Image (cartoon, rainbow, N blue to C red; front, top):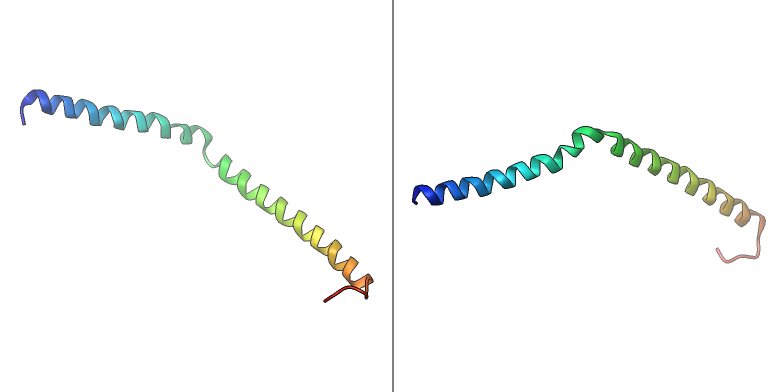
Length: 68
């Protein structure tokens, strides 16, 4: 491989590496805030669904004419 080709390949790979370092540098700024917000949103959805299911269970207990 000639010196010119080696310089070109180095420039290409270092350019790709610098691009990914720039893109993933975003995570240093955000940190774990996104992860924590997903976990909190998941628990809020869980409790909402459990409350909704409790209301269905109450309705099912009060209605003896339903198919079980």
